[in-house]
Length: 127
Image 1 (cartoon, rainbow, N blue to C red):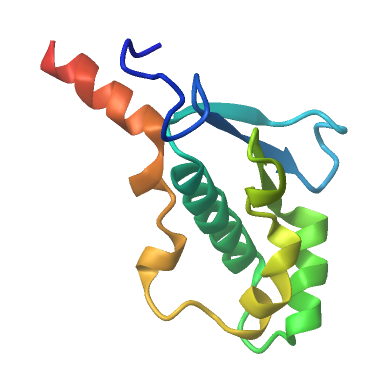
Image 2 (image 1 turned 120 degrees about the vertical axis):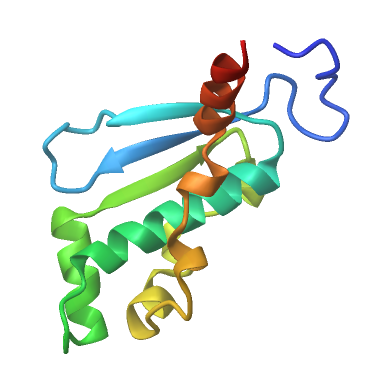
C-alpha cells in the first residue's frame, strides 16, 4: 500500500475489478480479480472498456444488437467494480447501447492501457 494512500481522493487501499466468465466455466467465481485502481474513475473506465472489448469479440458482421447481447451472455466476460457502491460502473447500464453502436475507435476497447498491473510490470523493468 502506498504511504500517501489516505483515502481522501479514493477508497483507502484502492478499488478492484472482478472479471466474470459469463459462459459459466468458472461457476459464480470470478476468473480473476484485478487490484490496484487508486480511484473509482480508473476502475470504472477499466471495467467499461473491458466489457466493451468482450462484447465486440462476440459480435459477428451483420448481427442484430439483440443477438450481440445474447452472444455476450453466452460467451463473454463481465467486469464488476468492487468497492464503488452506487457509483460503480455496471455493464447493464450500457450493454444495449454497446450492442447497437460499434465503437468509433479502438481506444473505446483498450482496457490494457488502464490495467494497473501494467504499471507494476514497468516498475519491475526499471529496477
